[in-house]
Amino acid sequence: MILTVTLNTALDVTYRVPSLRPHTTHRVTDVTERPGGKGLNVARVLAALGHEVTVTGFAGGATGRAVREGLTGVTDALVPVTGPTRRTIAVVDQRTGDTTQLNEPGPVITPAEWSAFQETYEGLVAGAQAVALCGSLPPGVPVGAYAGLVRTARAAGIPVLLDTGGEALRRAVAARPDLIKPNADELAELTGSHEPLRATEDARRRGARAVVASLGPEGLVAAAPEGRWRATPPARLRGNPTGAGDSVSAGLLSGLVDRLPWPQTLARAVALSAATVLAPAAGEFDRAAYEELVGRVAVTGEVTAA
Amino acid sequence: MILTVTLNTALDVTYRVPSLRPHTTHRVTDVTERPGGKGLNVARVLAALGHEVTVTGFAGGATGRAVREGLTGVTDALVPVTGPTRRTIAVVDQRTGDTTQLNEPGPVITPAEWSAFQETYEGLVAGAQAVALCGSLPPGVPVGAYAGLVRTARAAGIPVLLDTGGEALRRAVAARPDLIKPNADELAELTGSHEPLRATEDARRRGARAVVASLGPEGLVAAAPEGRWRATPPARLRGNPTGAGDSVSAGLLSGLVDRLPWPQTLARAVALSAATVLAPAAGEFDRAAYEELVGRVAVTGEVTAA
Image (cartoon, rainbow over all chains, first blue to last red; front, side):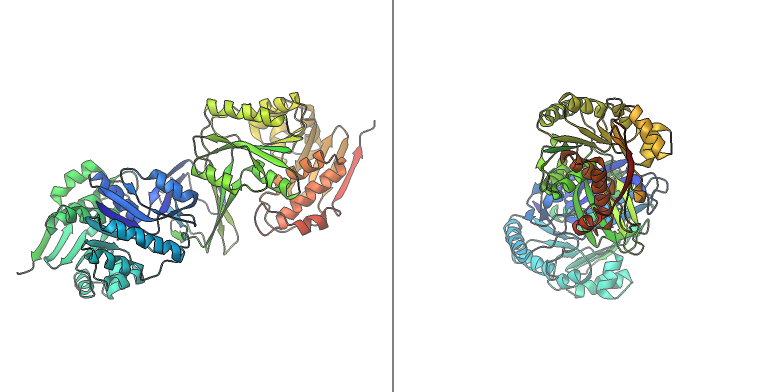
């Protein structure tokens, strides 16, 4: 079982409107909603790949119930909280195709709720093959939260992937996670370097065992004890990048538990990410595209001398 | 007991953002939500005035549960449906104070759900002092719905107020409701006349026993078998007009069940409406302002010769 943690789950709502005009009234022509937050997105992709997945984090209120009801193919181990799970609203302008995003802040987590989560997490980690810690921290959760969760997983001998940014990332890296997956901005903020190869090595020195930086359409750069690689999609892709980063995390976890060598793991991650960009619905992936692309990802690099 | 009917209930969500800029991402700084739809707004004001109120209509999904949980001080007789109750999102730009509105269409009501509602309604009407039929029709409900609901109330000898527009209003007027409360646009669409005095008389000839037209800041114009009146607030008011029309309906119903003469009923409706514009939160009313204003509404008119 792979365990994904989403402390700031969301109900992701997408509205289509003919044209967004501020300070007017709009009739929404189409409404879709689904569970959101990075860890739930990662879990959905992992489940689609055939992995057994358990999701945890927080859910509360009517929106939390909607999130839980929308979970399919994964085991729900979300911890109930009093505050309502946040909504994110993506308003798609059908004229231009542009999206305007409105993100609620999320519920305030009480100290008792945070303690209850930590207890649940400890119990779940014991039965996991790998753990993913994903996304931002909701109000009330201490900024060192991920550092503690990394230590718990490491104490249990379970590999842990971390995908977050800012101070939460900086603190958690010092707890020596097995793998971090920053994007270019998060990596630059962590290391002070905008040069990805140098920055990935710097992030390793700060405590991460391996670093896979996602560089958007240019693919991935990886630095690990076993070597360094660059993985690039076969072509420039047009589509919706929403969720592409979460598909990278899913690909990395999938390769990790399947014990693939780094180049195959990175190819899986890049192909899943590309197939997510190509899918018509945000955050889904196009399986046929994935299967076609996975053999065509260019991976170059060097293995560390033994 | 006063019965209010809201076939297209809503979860009214208000977001505050520092500044709304299309095609960017916004962190919502403040979220409030409450039950919405005209009949629920009317019920809230009636309950605050001390009336016993029962609400019916449809509620479904997680949003429907949130609506039901948010009802206070009224008896919940909403009929469950499969489709989710719609949300309305009001995005308030804190820089300009302007509001951008996003309204979901509402669930499709099945024929079986519509039948179940009619049965519930018939049972509730029997115990009501007055009935209010408020707002738009959700998809799936026949356009003649309000006409049928008016006939049911009239057959039971219960006075019925109708607040809707368009074809639903046109059809229902022919079923001879006791009182309709159109705004200027709805009245003009019904009668073809933009002259309120003429239009209210025309609406009476089409079947409404009494007509109270709300003319925004200019107050109300009323035409009834007992006479014709104009009721005007004591001053031009600055504030948020959201819900002011629903407070007019509440004032009219309140006067009706308290058996007040028309001038006092109209004064109550105008003062409630003004106190709603003055309240800081949209759709609430400022009780102190109401009590101060109700004696200062100017009502002029003529009583029909016996």
